[in-house]
Image (cartoon, rainbow, N blue to C red; front, top):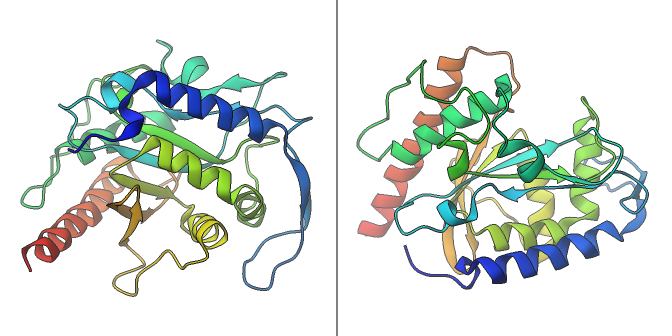
Length: 259
């Protein structure tokens, strides 16, 4: 894996801290848009609880031994009376893991070990019983909505935040520098981010309902358009469905590079 300018820990934190400081100052309105299904709302990061997120373990993420960097693009986090950090305050703790993050840990294990030739088998008793487990530390988590979140915000509201924060969200993705992005019921939000920030359409015509490729930091990044990890389908079905999509994407990429 080639070196990038963000693999220096100090440089990454300098840039991400500056980004979040600017993000926290933002306040404005989202109007109706005939092109996207959004809702007209006021967005006030200044007054609401602001929740940082991103790379879970920077040393592991940019380690030469880590061949894949899966980033989960989620909808929102919520809770607390003051600003906090999802990574430091939650994902790297040793507390008992919740069902959603247990599932993401399993998905990360699969994404790290599945190849174009072989899907890594589902392991029900994988050692992911607490936050800070070895698999979760190989991932990144980015929420679309950084402030004022709740348990069940509508997708239209999430898309409104994507439209308002498009350039900042794209910059965060660039700083994280993933090799794969798993859209957790946020594919339409990524469409909005990409179009608003770059002026171009994110998806390619081929197989867009399952996976596609974007150019991020001058390299191809796989995007998997998938369910939210809090869905009610069985764990094993969730796992193998995502791994099948990932394997198809890897096979397609191999064919492309072989041409």
